[in-house]
Length: 238
Image (cartoon, rainbow, N blue to C red):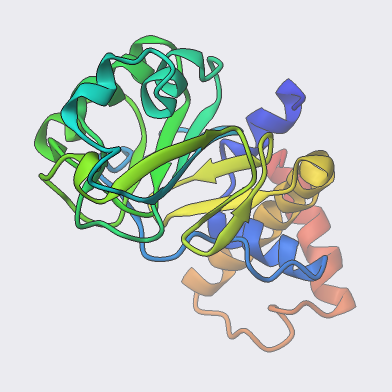
């Protein structure tokens, strides 16, 4: 991902991104049912980074006991130490938040390693502590029980489903206070550019609406409105 693309995506809403993706025929791009544990402050950049994935299947009692964490090849623990800096650690927990996908210690380790964020369609434990971290963290619901009760870690960096959205390694994850959008890696540059242009237009529309203007002829625009937008953009240096 180019730095210019990353910079643009850091300032574009997931609402705008999903609309741009919809124009390309991609309907299932927003991970539903999750929220950010530590909401971003106003004007704080979005979470942006390529996906590095972990896949869980249902746990089995003879395999998932507390001793498995002593094995350095355990996918959850290995993934925490191998996820590339700048990436987003994305976990397929089968939308099951009855046991934690991870907890504060592992999420803190990801933060210290320079990871861009962490996303699960399940739940995290230690959420009060995670809330205080300077790392975007998205989940469905708090969950105190250890992952071993319900989750068996099987794969790293393979295609997964997260919140029923397909996520392939390297796909670009963008998270704001509304949620997380998934952009196929091959079209990230063009999506970022189109969404950047759409954001400028929607800022213009919002300004006019707040001035009391109606939406007919404004949103979507008539040719006259497009000319007005061009003048506005020039004057506002957008």
